[in-house]
Length: 201
Ligand SMILES: CC(C)(COP(=O)(O)OP(=O)(O)OC[C@H]1O[C@@H](n2cnc3c(N)ncnc32)[C@H](O)[C@@H]1OP(=O)(O)O)[C@@H](O)C(=O)NCCC(=O)NCCS
Image (cartoon, rainbow, N blue to C red; front, side, top):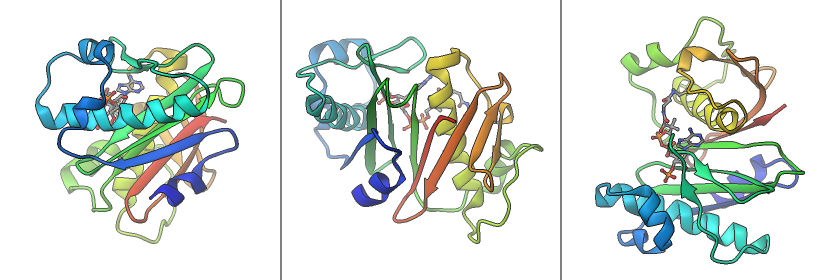
């Protein structure tokens, strides 16, 4: 997973992943714990695993013990001059960070490599999406992950909550465009899990 994620990253983006373990909520710093509030313990462990990766990446940038608080919309609040993103599925957490000079923003998602249920697929696929032939039965799940990553990359720049219908993905161009005109480069990998990355084009 580490290698698949690193291979997706554009220059300047640091990446990390971790198997979520029971007790990972211990990695939340006190200020993070307070900003996240009460959630059930599996969700806190996933958030703790994501923050743990983020802390390690921030430490490599020279920021020690720096709390990544949760914003009002669930968005992680990064230190000035840093951009980043966090995601988790049931088993794995991933995080990415970069200096704002390298990337203006970034979004990541991780999903199990399983077909998307038909009822969800019809919500995720929008008329303007250009899926092409991804050569896999996972195109719906990949599109879902790419749209979530695109949303996370656009939110810090535009402050808009988007629905799936607000993001048009063109897999051949490797691009997503939001209904607010934000153009993002999108990349994905399928093995061993689905990873999606988005950042301003
Ligand atoms: C952001 C969102 C898509 C995340 O989806 P999810 O499946 O619940 O969870 P993921 O593991 O993929 O991502 C969760 C992480 O995303 C990050 N995140 C949450 N809201 C965010 C936002 N507005 N902007 C950027 N990042 C955000 C957080 O770091 C969160 O992890 P944490 O709570 O441990 O800090 C979802 O929480 C949300 O806000 N949805 C509303 C809008 C929507 O669903 N639109 C359709 C998709 S375009």
